[in-house]
Length: 319
Figure 1 (tube, one colour):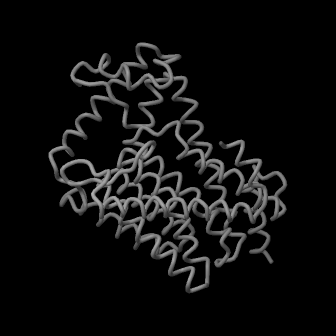
Figure 2 (cartoon, rainbow, N blue to C red):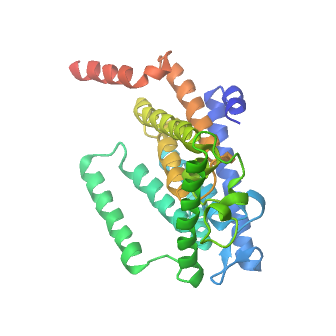
Figure 3 (cartoon, rainbow, N blue to C red):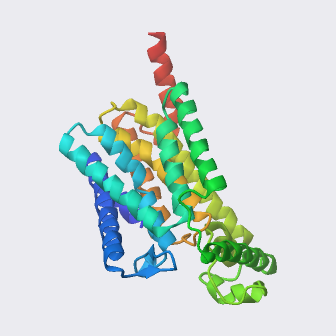
């Protein structure tokens, strides 16, 4: 998927259309989720958690699909001057928030808070950063101390306890086979054998423990390097975004890649989505956005963006 997107999306116009397609697709998911709430279809648990089918058959996965697109909606709301487009984006954002709430996903809630926090503080003056940080700390305390916005059914505690046992199984799998692990897609078939206290076979519910159990310590190392490289490229895009005016949608896209991937990692701490399309569409978007925007600004060797931008800003300040 990364190679296909990298070779197809090769112009600024295609990058913009690519992000709009992601927004529209997740809007469709949000509308389908609201439809399920109204009709009562695909609802699970005592609290009635909304879900879909297939890859989105778990409420947490549905919340993750919504979370990774939220930063780009934030950026487009501030970038576009048209009142109609802004109104549509705001309604779209509210539908997504309602969808995340309806999933009762703790990982989705944390991911949404992460992308909102990062988009609000990155590139902002220090005073705004402190105010936003204080507000986010207050909200976290509400969730941790008062359980604000969290599900309180009996299944919530069981779900949390089961995750620790499954993570233990992932570690035991890696210890038994540290180099190759237990094999791709084998976690859900072997977890019971490596965690005797857990009665059934189940997936890891963590991108890291899933990779650790199935691919061993070597596979986990390369997976973490993939995540680190993407975060590094996303951080470079934060610098590159400063080359574009405030009302440019390309500035919004460049600013959204880093928070989006951070949201995936936070959600992925409790989800088994290491190999599905969620992280790789963001990785591909980061690659093509970096390449297209860097070449337009004259940084032909776009892997040297950060020092080149810093030198350019230094020259401006001296003038």
